[in-house]
Image 1 (cartoon, rainbow, N blue to C red):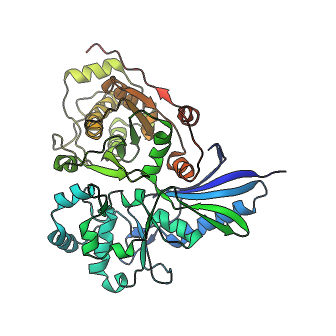
Image 2 (cartoon, rainbow, N blue to C red):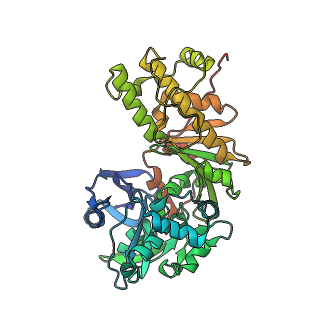
Image 3 (cartoon, rainbow, N blue to C red):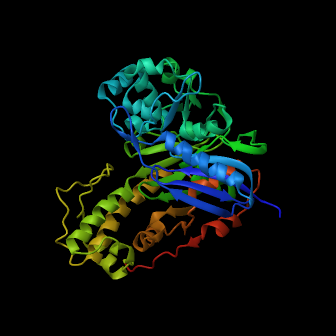
Length: 461
């Protein structure tokens, strides 16, 4: 019996670690999820357990190699960004994989801006809103001045996707999508590392840049396998759309963060963009993607928990709420702000506390919450569209199942083609596609993403 040829993708999120097999037509053959317990760094701050992650990857890989049904042709990795693995001359790991939510010492941040320019200047030039460890380049600066004895031992610093590739190839490389995701490393106008990287001699620790589509042919247990160099997950999730759609579009990726990604806007960021939490990601060819984000899913969860407690509903009740046009129109007649948001830093009228007394039912308060979140969503999408010719908006992620959110999107963006797409494959599919030479066409998204066109609402406003 001939074996089924497959590509393996390890898709490493902060919470879920996923493992996929795809056939030559990108059909999912196997998918497995796991959650791995965290460990702590030297300050007792929770962080990814790199050793546990390596074991899980190697165990799954070896199990598939031994499997009678499959022949592995290629392997690739998509992971979250802003995370470095630092290696010494012998390839040993020198530090924990520092968590990008770990607070950074204020005196080190002050030193950085004193030496290299103001927060706003650095943010604009590197297209990275300033956020401490979330700007992974700052981690290297922090190590240099906080732990100089460790910093001196570093031979190479690899972003997490490239480190996972290195485990299989022993070759250290850098690639655009990891360099370009809010790292503070890349000067987008110069199309090179930022001056501060050279001034601090950090460029010597960053391996040569190769295309994201590069792969290394290797022999593993007498089998020839193509190993990809890894890809940052946000850029990877965008890739199937870029490869199959010719006309300009915006992808709204919803979840804990709501991120508007526009691969057809290459304007430099302005000071105002930075204040509105805009940033750039990088396409696999090094071109910029204008993005704007806000912490929508996080805020939604906080507020829905409060609604459930106030109205005596079990958490989960909100998932059944359908859009009610009469309710919506009534709320819009007396439009005001009733919710005090806790985790969102975008400009909006601040009120001292949430007012739920104005709403008689859970459904009414829930519609009001969605109206207030949608106001911010409209703002971030328009920022990302800018002056570009976008006519199509694709929405993916958790909020595609939220009837109120989707109806409001179709209403507010009725002059666009708004489509919901549903793919549990997300960034894994992009990682599989980037190391394959197979061309795809317009029908690809229809087949793989359960694409639905949203009808605009006809409202008598």
